[in-house]
Image 1 (cartoon, each protein chain N blue to C red):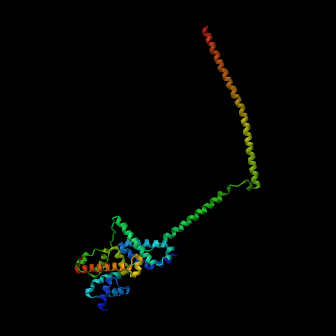
Image 2: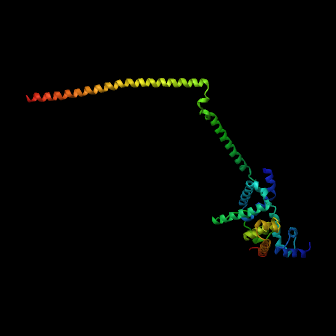
Image 3: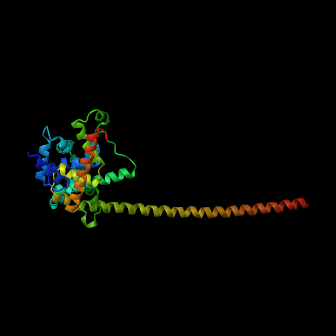
Length: 164
Length: 169
């Protein structure tokens, strides 16, 4: 390549006016083994540009974690939904009304109610017997009062004996 | 969108994202982390990907913003990003400037450029984007880009001339 042309290109290059093609020409020229001595200074520049261009990003791109994370999130959501459904199945249908009961169940229910009523009436009888007990307690109290009167009588008697 | 489709879209420019991140953050590890994070962001927004008319340009803008944010927060914490990607070349430079050393110098000199010029030089001279594309990515008009680029290239050449003629900066 003509040296004259390279010099002109270099001037344009330094003014930022070269096109990409022209810059490529310069790079090609300076990647030769031997260049004109007064242009030697430019050589490391262009060689460096060409070298750096080849540098690569070698690390792997970790895209997987993000993906599994969202998957886990949805699995947990599904698990909770299943759990809630199971709980509902297990305990959810206890609140039945009387109309839902079958014949047998109704019978059992009535018998239970009857038994409870019987129990309640027995309790009432028991309470009546307790009334008799109260009556006895009041009589006992009266007796105690009489004993107290007796005490008062004996006190008076003692006084009379002392005076004699 | 499946993972394979996403990778088909992303694969062609993932290296460019990485290189821009490395240009700004300098450290290899930082740049790798940044690239991963940007790709994951894209993946998480994959539903919207069809709406972007240019995914690549969008990603480059994202990279630029992400890295500048990183740098700002590092700066606020008063932490310097640790980078151990290159050895100190001073000793060998004192002897004789070899080509490989000078090539490494280019990277050092580029580090000293202002962020804006760094990004533009990276996008143009290394990734070979058209001015119109860079203008869209950075939201700056083309004239301003040319001016920045010209300044960056001149600074690069001047500093290289210095190292070249004295051996030591």
